[in-house]
Image (cartoon, rainbow, N blue to C red; front, side):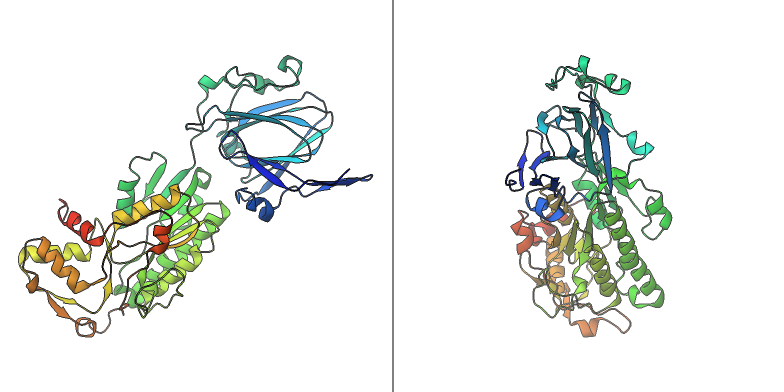
Length: 469
């Protein structure tokens, strides 16, 4: 055997179906090949699909034909011996449904088959060993999710080298439906936890047109309950968005609140991160400016956490757990405003009554409207942005709480002069949580992946014109 070619990969007519040419090294004793390599193949486009099971199908006779099966997991197909003709048909719901690709495979070839793409092969030599890695464990329940296509479907028209009337096939494969009767395989779903909070409600709005998103409040999925994890069919999901959190900043300084903050913001996130790793999920987790002490004027994503209080400490611990998931987005926000109790709504109510509040003027940042956080999360997922941490507040000038309160008064037709400035030390009493002085977030990274948050002032105007305020 001569010099082995370099490892290469190429795309095919089916989106996500990749063909690899493998270096095979041989001499008079036989041959050796590196069949799967996470690092080198990943550099050539192979998804980090996390295989958990290796299967081999041995076929004694030339002409053995199996398929067309679309399975609810990804698979990486190669040969240990022999030669096959492979045929693949896209049976996923979407524009590429029915697209066909076929080629001959030897031990020097491999194919990555995405979930929902129908897979079939016909052996061209006796004693062919067909091997494949999959990223979920086979079970009877999983088999019920398969989608099948008839090997002889005239629309797919796979050009089998050995006519099917001369091939060896199973009775089940002979009875599969034609393309027009196939129910396309739906994509895996997205699960939103904490769906009744401010960000959760905004996620309901932003994903309203997507039928593959499930929303769960605490009643449906309690992050702190083991039965929530064991009772969920994780195989249905590819992504989980954690919008649940303990956010009572001052109460977190009490003995009871401290325990609740750590249970929800840290221990439960650690459990969720473990589930994401075990089931190869993408985890989206909402973070907070409170993980910083506010010394820096503007906080970038790579700044080390330095939380002042219990709430910030518990959130920083949850961030660290979420970051252990290979596919994660930590979305860090500040001063959240949405459908629920928040600073802007409180100030609007005071303005309506003509009250004269004192508001701190030495804490600085930007508002983060929940609808823009939710839209940013959708953007990260739909564009497959690089995994990692992203700051996501609204844009515009950095302001103090006092300046924002004055603007709320103005927009509600009240006199901004009613809002008196006060410093943090004078305003907050003993027993309340320390706050970061500066909460402004650097937005250059989120802009770099194509998402530009709306100016906070413009969004504030829209928010105060809404019927719910």
